Image (tube, rainbow, N blue to C red):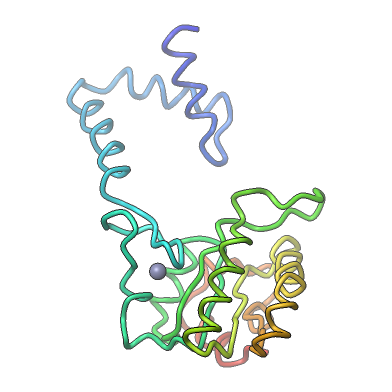
Length: 204
Ligand SMILES: [Zn+2]
């Protein structure tokens, strides 16, 4: 395979990028000067060296490996509440609405409706471990499922509720869904602070 095709294959793995777009990226780079390409390479490397995931909530942030993020680490965080989001962008959006002071958990994806197996990027094992820990040590009393209100989000909501039943029976926390305060089809990532504020207020 020649270098053009090789790099095209890499870009094709990006979310939402097909063969044609991938090839356009390659030709874009071929037209750029060597400094630009060098800088791009360095920045990608830099990203992997300086950004790590919080071992508790799985947020990506600038840190050393295995370092807790500000929210998980802060004594000001309300440790009795845990909010589950699909991805980092949803976390940022809820944080920006300044209406929630508890802990977060980033699930990493949604559970597909069609396949029987949960894909391995959805962190169900880690979620169970986290909730068990928080229940034991921090008196967790509320789990908020904050997923987008589309079929896959609702499916995941149901899936998580079922998954959490044994822990809920042991530790007696409430499970509420933020989605019911949003209108149908709403992507959490694109919701404004006012909408999120209302959804948090009307959670049920
Ligand atoms: Zn964290």
